[in-house]
Image (tube, rainbow, N blue to C red; front, top):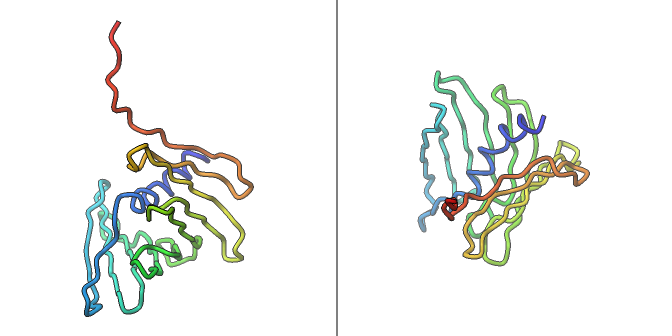
Length: 158
């Protein structure tokens, strides 16, 4: 269960801690970008600054629908909330994003259609403020799993 959950949530979590979102020009024109994922799938991001919305649509390597996330952006063009849909269009969960005083994503709360908490993802940072990993908790606050930061130290030889 935990491994499956990590596999489902990790791409969303990594997208969110990877860096700043899309810049929007002064004219609020719609911007479209695409990323190729390691598994051969691709995600197209359509950002509409005037609507404060970003839509991420993923297709599999064979071109089949893989899912969609519709994000609402805050005044600083960061993800404020989102609705996640499965490949067939079925609703999966809602998300709420919280940022720390430095503007980094600190927490993601995933909710079902009735706003019951399904999961919380808490992001951590190293002393320099770089992403160091995240922990996933169930709706009751029980730890489901966590990533471990990469070590910058070399193994000691004996």
